[in-house]
Length: 216
Image (cartoon, rainbow, N blue to C red; front, side, top):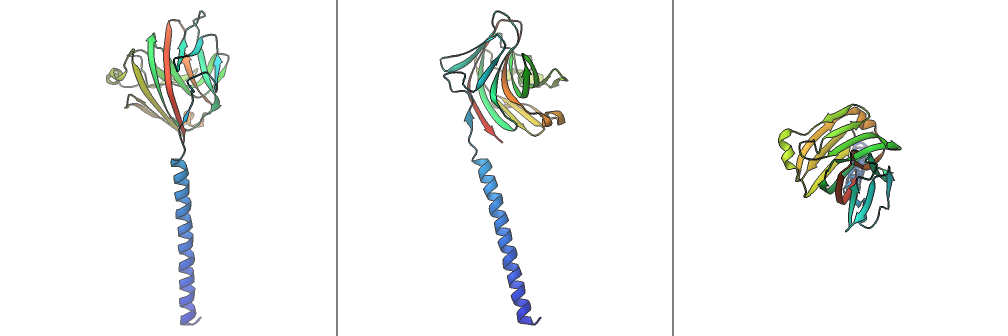
């Protein structure tokens, strides 16, 4: 191959590689844009329990645009689960504890009757580990928040909780303060719905609103 031929080949090879690189950059940009453009959805419409399923005999109802869970006469565990499963997500919600506020938010969970399997982000009275993660019918507490962070909970007032679950990692925040960060292989293999809990024992009443979920 003479000099002119070699030069032409080098230029053609350079242009080809440049084109491939530009296509790769464009593809990565498109994927990032699609991920960023995923909009948060509302899990609760403020009118009824459409999109949710009641498990057990405890009370779940809508009042003044808020979702209310309340102990019934049986004083047993009760759950309200999403009809759809969610694997990786970023969820924000608000809750206000009235009377005994022992409740929780389950993720990647399944249920048989009122026996639920999965993981719970605790919602409870002060000094009972709100924001911690508990494995139902398994290993129990996986992580609890620091004692000093218990003061973040505003009893009898509205609190904002954020739960981010992606792969094996779970992070929770309460009123903008990070409560825990956990990496767990078993959680990484889990699948299932999101659910709210009423603890057994009676006397429980919690109000919920502004459920915003973004799939990741």
